[in-house]
Image (cartoon, rainbow, N blue to C red):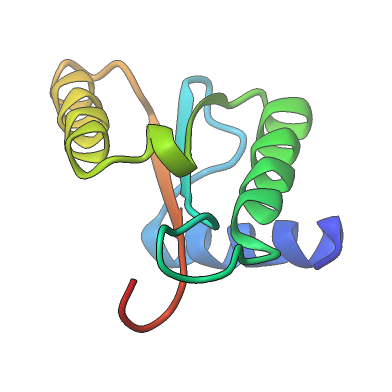
Length: 107
């Protein structure tokens, strides 16, 4: 997918959720898995996550945390979301985007 399409999708989600891409303190958590033990490697989840992270970082000055493949264990994902929630309660972030990409169906 092109960067323009990703940006458009981010804007749609942001508008729907009331997120401002131009707020001062923005955070994105990007989680993507394309490697599985019992099926072939997928082509797009990690690549798409990396492209989205780059756009948010470079064009919108987001702080971006990324979890890919082996780093994206169930516990690591829960820990990252818990940390975001705690920081949000302290009003550290004006807006937060969580992007999660993996295989559809059973993995």
